[in-house]
Length: 192
Image (cartoon, rainbow, N blue to C red; front, side, top):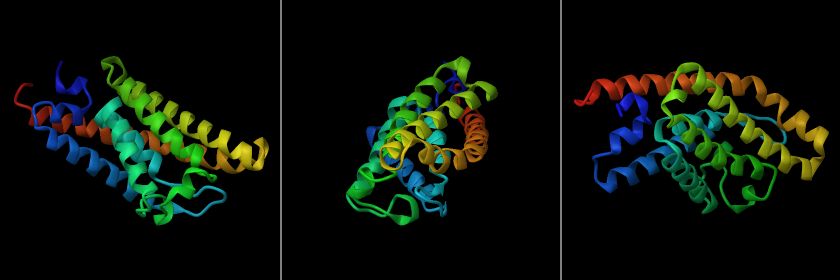
């Protein structure tokens, strides 16, 4: 299978030592952390670039590696490192209003990473649809958690609706970056 038909990061790591994979997981987790620090204050959940970074990682890394990256990011945040929105960290965020979104990030990374590993879903439009599905997963998980805290209507109004336009824009941007990475991997790979 050519590098354009697999996740670009997975293709790059295929013949590398395991230490490269570990480095990729840490770098990916820090990319998500950096995206967490770009926020627009909102209540009860701030708007960030986290979903863009998570979908980008999914499209670049594939299911297992993307899930490992997201779980590593969340583990570091749980230990108290300032890697969540607005530089937050600690266990409280895993039981508060953002808990559903955090769980949704893992599910979306794995699901979108797995779907984009299929050659027929690596085209521009199919990948866009996969990334929109990723946002649906994240927003649904977030909405479910918020519903238990503030009720279904308020959770929809405050925890889903404000993020819909951003979901479309971040999905499209993630597709563009993944497609550019595919081109770079194709040019860099002597097997092509």
